[in-house]
Amino acid sequence: LVQANEMGMASIGVDVSEFNCHIAKVKLGRYDIALAHKEVLEVESRVQRFSNRLHTKNDSTLELFPEDRLDKLKDGLLAECKSEYLRTWFAPNALLEMLYYRRLIPLYQYQDLLRIILSRAVRSSRLITHYDLATPKAPIAVGETYWCRKHNRMCIPIDNCIKKIHAYSEDTVRRIIEFDKLRSSEPSVIANGDSRTIKLEKHLPKGVLLDGVFTSPPYVGQIDYHEQHIYAYELFGFPR
Image (cartoon, rainbow, N blue to C red):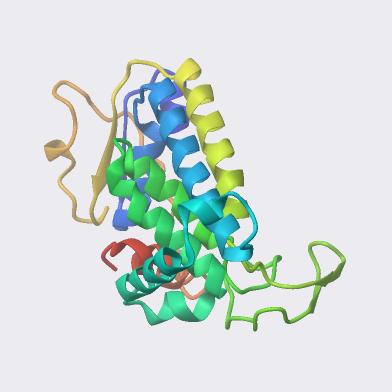
């Protein structure tokens, strides 16, 4: 859909996964760039200060998060986490950082954008090997070393989420700015449904006709689409 829009083509995309449709809507969204950038940086900054406080008692964050308030905040965040998956697949500090970010999202205008940034960060912050983000079989213990095929050395699984939040915040804003310069005024429609039975005429803008179809069939038995995005289902309650 992004490429079709850049080429000046009206397009419609269909996917049975609500999460996939959510990603597409964020990629194709129109934003007040300055405001979106401000919100992304502000959320990241607030989580960074919280992360700093989790790791040290001797910096300026002590005033923001005194011991009693920090303990109450951590207890509250963990109480909000009803997912055994999240408690199992993330190091303690990584879990707290992502839960704190999630709590901040309703305070901002571009909430869907922030959810996707957090989803990208969470996917890369699990207790898994660095070379297998798509099909991990089981979490690795915090601090356990393993031979990493990606880095060709001994590694340990990531024990925080803030580093990925920083990386994906910058990357996402860059992508939004780049697409804003390239996009056309043609409509890009996202339809959540089963492509075999969906009634496209209910979703197409008036007067738009279909000239061609591209499909990507499911890789039956090779990709478990449910497991691939389970972190987002568990974090935001997207339907299976």
